[in-house]
Length: 474
Ligand SMILES: [Zn+2]
Image (cartoon, rainbow, N blue to C red; front, side, top):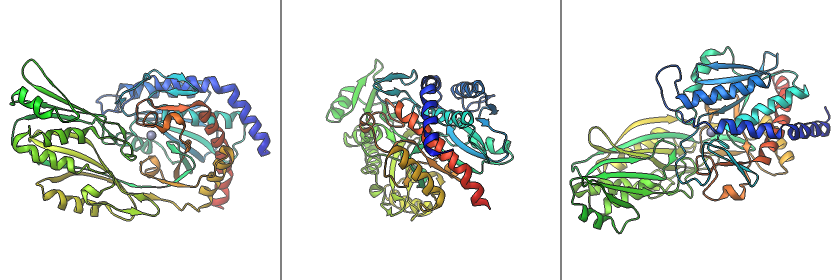
């Protein structure tokens, strides 16, 4: 089909389907689907099971074959060809922490945007991929490949969903778009390293700490519970610090620190509530002989770029190392525990980072534990398919973007022959450029016209891939 005729047909399709597309994103966003391990038939919780049922139901109603892989993930398939082009997305979301002006789980339309947790990451993209499939089917332009949309329920919290998918299928798609990031093509993802540092506590002043809920979000809230300390003395000691302290009837002191949340891979502009809390507990001296432990822990959060944990490093292809701590608690063995999330470039290994951090924190009596690593991935930004996808994006979006690298991790690292390609647009809209609106942040939102443009880009991209792949295999 001539490109300008295809363009007109896609525009007509989008006009006709616009309301249904918005409605279907809303139906998914309205379900609170934070992935949490669960016994029984719904391994990632009731919310994830419910949203998966709804998404597969939408696929079924649009006339596609659907499959549910033990409620770990599901897929929607279109076309009779054996070989497949895949879309990978996820229906689980991170918790709606921080201050929201819009309802996180009741999608609202305002000023051309759709607000709600998951609009951008990654329920909106799941519907974008689904309507790309519908458009390609309705126009009858796929020749060599069937299409398969996979929707996971555990992307934000371990990526264990696709293990079950791989167990069920005979072959993965020949090529897959991971619809969970920005346009154009992400050619490299940094390594992602998690570890916990621990230090025994000797006093019983700080009874409990609750900072952060998941390992990949810089928390906007952290709390500590203090006991065995006169309340007047505690309130006075904490007064100079940016925390709220309240005394309950039994004399317990609750200390609350607030910050600005962000994705762990993009800490710029965030304020870590854990850091605020640890500084207050350490500098005020209320934790008596443990004050130095809190102070040293806070010291490891003095910057985002590895300097305060002695691993500052940058690489020309994959950028600079970032480090944040997303969770803080007191262990059963009465230790202060701080869980770090490090995104590292390809020029350093996780072993080197762990060695360096272990040596540094040992000087203050901390030990390193619970190391979890996912190595960096890389494909050449000059490969033909990367170039072709980048050109299609630039032509339709009238942009001059180049392939990029990313600190966040996606399914690209567990699905062979894949890369992240949209569907978010790199030019940050006015609403999303502040601290609101991006993925993992309060008031997450997607610009509705961008949803439609993304479908158009995907239609052209998949149609091109359908022809590039047979050529590449000859
Ligand atoms: Zn995502």
